[in-house]
Length: 458
Image (cartoon, rainbow, N blue to C red; front, side, top):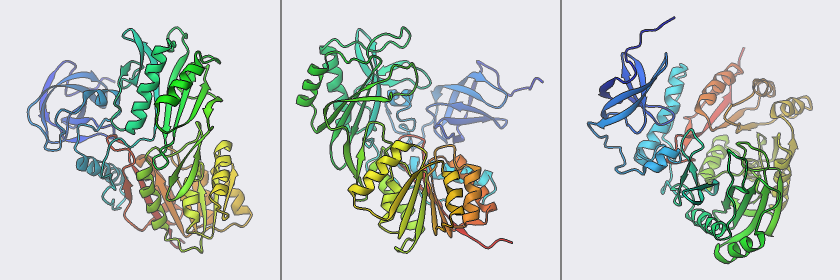
């Protein structure tokens, strides 16, 4: 069935941007038909050329900005916008925080949920915060380059300043790149499946200042490894660990399963809320420790722990939330599907002399059912699921276990709203304003903490 659209491809339209999408694109509406326009902000009057049409929406390209929003960052670096490193880099920071609050509020309204969203907890300095970088290594412009892919492509944009990364990490990448150039190392060629070095991964402890460099190669041998290591040890402040990772597969996954310590330690350390964590190349560890502390503190405050409660932490990872909560609870049980993460969690508990936390490997929803069958009655359930949200089975298990409180730490507002509706069907209600936390300034991502409490249901 052919639908008559109110615009056609190639047409130039003048109008006012009404909104921002969750991807940070401006929305121009023609007879309620949305046109998504990159690098435009609400309230700006613009001239736009329609570049692509679908039945439900179109894409447009800005040809002229007729008025400018007071929230616009003048001369925003286009490189950061193009690569997706900072898709909100053109929006002033207070407006970014309001955008993230509104993102959650709009989804709640759409779902007919009459809930309040608190103002977003932001950062004093909302840049140079990331403690981990994974950058491709490619041959371009006659030299080995490091940088970031252009949005939606595998075209490398060479860069040295990544804006949202710890500046020491940026400097470390440049140092390693220069050493690799001097030693004539071959960069990976995706098309021909040739060359050696595919990626560099650098981690730096926010509190410890320890630096880990992981060199990812297609081949099992890293040429000139000895000279490369000597140069890195000599030139990189805080270097603690140099790892060679082998990833022979042609895949979007950066790290392969094989790690070889070339120099120093196999891990680095850092702290969250006073707890020391051991971080390996493959460890999942929050990339913005300053905001993670705010996020976890918000979760602990929401649960109102006083040392008498039994807590389950579903999706516990390496135990970051579990161990932070253990200080305030009688007993904490953590479950995670990744065996290596549970090993890390147990080691982290041991190193921090935390004896009231117990960790098991398993699917959260299956382990919850086992705990329920064994008669475990938690006072508080903390969930911090991946972007896809909670499994239906876990929600049912939570309903049967009936903890008095559920603290939902979310990284995806869309699945949060869906899951809140499901949890309400199990007899829970949201009793405090939802608290957004800006874990990733300059990007469209938003984390949040929601407290649900048990109510009597017929």
